[in-house]
Structure formats: structure tokens, C-alpha cells
Length: 458
Ligand SMILES: O=P(O)(O)OC[C@H]1O[C@H](O[C@H]2O[C@H](CO)[C@@H](O)[C@H](O)[C@H]2O)[C@H](O)[C@@H](O)[C@@H]1O
Ligand SMILES: O=c1ccn([C@@H]2O[C@H](COP(=O)(O)OP(=O)(O)O)[C@@H](O)[C@H]2O)c(=O)[nH]1
Image (cartoon, rainbow, N blue to C red):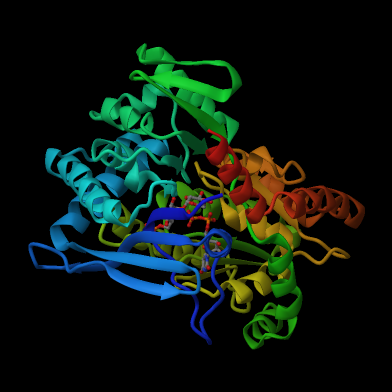
């Protein structure tokens, strides 16, 4: 394959010594870029009050050039907080009630995409393969084509794609769908997301599915497929094994005093179903008196997108709820919920997952949910825990050894917690073995290779 150019809203720069190791996606993309040589371009995460942002910050590390651009404060407000996270994110997570449309934000989103295309185009060589990531950058290919680029351009959507009736509530859904047709390959997380996309094209009468995964719309023919993202399974399992000696993990183990640990790990996001999960835990405790004072629920929830009002409101709501439930069901010697509002490094997380008898992953809607896969990879093969997983996470299409739940059904989720806690070792091993075998084969390197193989062949 020729040179690879990756474009994403956030860029993972190489780790400095002493930093926590990079996440699975960064590991896979950096490996692919290192192999083929290439560029990783995106937003620096910085904004300035200046009218024009500073020139690209170019950093060379081995075979990879990192090209980072600042954005203006207005750009960040309209493109990232505004249209990407207050329109596309809620719509793609089936939350029409939370979408806030504003002409200014929509215009800002398309303007920033044009700006990034203009910064990127001069760096591109004729046979470069370009891989664009996620909902922030859907119109990028259209902009690049308008500037005359003929390169292969692929797009991968990390979040769900909703059914037509949800999508069509978004005023600019036509422009967004049209934007995707300028790619050569459009990849989704699951078969359901792909089917929703094709369904939308057909319903609107603007496109069709041809043979061999080919799609046609707006006079263009391109390929659609699904490529479930994964983790660096073997490496993550190693972290978990090693973490037994980590001081934080040891302290955590000591502090639960032999109780069963239930773990939840999510960005503070309304799509993650955290409030329903706390309700389910409360219901489990109330309806299983034998487990009083015998179980600890650890919820690790770093703050996310705090400038967006819906996220800011959630911070208060979840903290209050955790406090209320602890007040209602706790005792002088037992705090049932430990709620942590900070980010924890992945090697420590790996150790905490391994300590936990239940991994509670119950999003209301999620593109994939890598926490579910990490929980499985981190388990002790001789004494694995049980994954309780929402059927609305992309991961549920693959992790069939999990106890699948409907997160809106509080009693059902509480019953699954009880079933997991009481599950015999043979059943736990059998369920875990099936999932681990799958994750070892379909790891993040396989995901990256599969997508790039199809893109180069497209
Ligand atoms: O960049 P942020 O706004 O801070 O948000 C963090 C990331 O959130 C989203 O993650 C998604 O991608 C995961 C990997 O494919 C997937 O497992 C998960 O279900 C998705 O929610 C977002 O898509 C990323 O772009 C953000 O960087
Ligand atoms: O305190 C934390 C919480 C989460 N994560 C990582 O953040 C990622 C979350 O990915 P996921 O797909 O579950 O959800 P997203 O946040 O991307 O929607 C996983 O790799 C977690 O290990 C982390 O490193 N520290």
C-alpha cells in the first residue's frame, strides 16, 4: 500500500517516557502509519481568539508526520461543541429530544471541514490513501474532491448510524448523507448501522444497494461495510496480569474487604446509561438482602465535553443520585457505590477490571464500547468475571458470552447482576472463553487491516 494519511478530530501524539500507554485505536493507527509512512492530521485541542489560527504544527516522529491545527474559539464552539456534539452526537445516539439545531453551528461545522481540507490538500501526494475518522469530519471528502483530489478516501464512523425516521429529523440530513457519497469506502461499526444507512438512502429515494457491498447515491458509486473496532487484546491481557502488583489496584483490593466488586467505566455521557445503571444496582441490592454489605459498585466516570449544557447537567445529576442511593441503602460500615469523577490510566483500569466479578456496561446506545472488550480481555482465565452488557452497544453484536440486557429495563438489569454474581465457575469460564477467543482473533490490528484492505481495493 502507498502512503497513509489519517485525519481525525483528535490526534494521539506518540507517548513520552513516563506517560500512560496509548489506547488501542492509537496503537493500531500508529502501527499502520509507521509501516506505510504517512501523516496524521487533526485538531490540536487548542483554540485561540485570533481570527486566523496559527500555521500547522508539524512534528516528525519516525515514519509519521503529525500535522496539528489550532481552531478559533468560534470554530470550536460551532463545529465541536455545537454541531458535532449537540446535533450529530445526539441524533446518532437516537436522542432527537436533545438535538439543538442552530444555523450558525451548522455553518460552522461545514466551514471548519473546508478549512481542514484546505490545510490538508497541500500535504497530499497523488497515490496517498486517506482515512477520515468520525462524525466531526463527514464533509471532508466532498471538500477535497472539490479541490480536485482523486485519491482513495475512506471514512469510518465510530458512533451508531440511526434509522431513517431518526436521521430525517435533522434539518441537514441530505447534506450529511451526500457528504458520505464522496468517499470510496464508508465503514460502520455493525451490520445494524450499515443497514440503517442503506435503509435511509433507499427510503429517501436517493440511493440503492448494488451487488458486492456497493452503494450508489447522488450519482456516485462507493462501498459500504462494517468493521467492528476492537482493542489490543493480548497486550491488554498482559497489563491486567501485571497490574496485580500495582499499588492502586492493591489498595482497591484491600479496601473492598472481600466483597464482590462490580465495575462501571464510562465517560460522563448521557448515552452511557449511568443513571439507569445506578437504579438497577439499587434495585439489585434491595431485592437481594443476602448481598447487603457483600458487594461494592465502583463507577469510574471522567468528565467529558463539560462545555455542552447537557453534559454539565449530567455531572450534577449522577453525583446526586449516587449520594442519594448510598444514603438510602448504605450502612455505617458499608458505602455501596464508589463514584469517581476522574480519569484512570488504562493499565490500572485493567487491574481493576480483573478484580471485578461483574463488568457492568449498559449504554442506552453506543457505537462499540471498548470498555466491554477490555473487561473481557482483563479477566483471569481461571476465575473470570461476568460481563453484563447492553444489547444496544455495538459490542453486543460480537460478545455473545455476555449477559445481554435492555438498560431501560431496570428490574431486568438488576436480575442479570444477581445472575452474574451467583454464576457457577464452569459457566463463567465457558462464556468468557468464547468471548476471549473472538477478541484475540478480531483485535484492533485486524480491524485496521480489514478496513485498509477494502479501501485500497475499493
Ligand atoms: O473526543 P471526545 O469528544 O472527548 O470524545 C471521546 C471519543 O468518544 C467517541 O468514541 C466512540 O469511539 C469508540 C471507538 O470506536 C467507540 O467504542 C465508542 O462507542 C464511540 O462512542 C467518539 O466517537 C470519538 O471520536 C471521541 O474521540
Ligand atoms: O478513566 C478512564 C475511563 C476510560 N478510559 C478509556 O477510554 C476508552 C473508552 O472507550 P469506549 O469505546 O468504551 O467509549 P467512548 O468514551 O469512546 O465513547 C476505553 O479505552 C477506556 O479504557 C480510560 O483510559 N480511563
